[in-house]
Image (cartoon, rainbow, N blue to C red; front, side):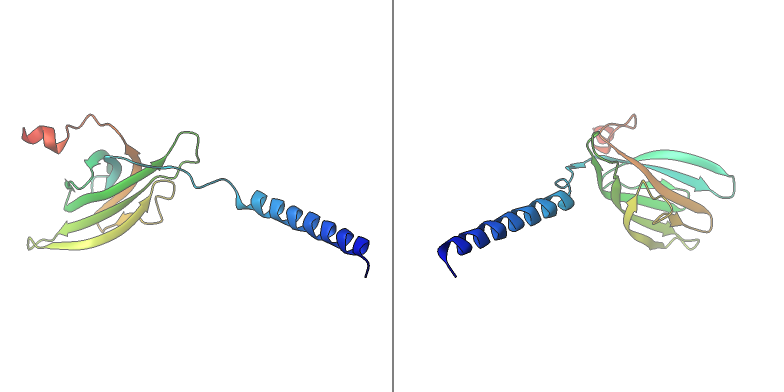
Length: 146
């Protein structure tokens, strides 16, 4: 094989490698969206007895009682306005039983864009994540104790 043929082969190989790299980069998509940590999780709750739906805000690591359920969000993440909405929160939900015992009935992630995926389904109450927020009309627990 002569030197000219080897250079021609090297150029074709490099051109194909560069094209393959461009294709891989185009399929990789954009970089991961920036995740915003929010201090407030907004929930909706359904009382199946009365048919009433209530929307309520809960500060991260604080507990709010909805009927016989105690809802505690541990984190609440959202994305910037220019990203696809992906709002999720890690939640713990306890039930106060009739004999006044507290029993954990849910611990896991909730997703606002898929409310039926990990909603709390209780015989009397349903709870699902609506949104994550930076501000609320509900006073923060720190201000309430001062």
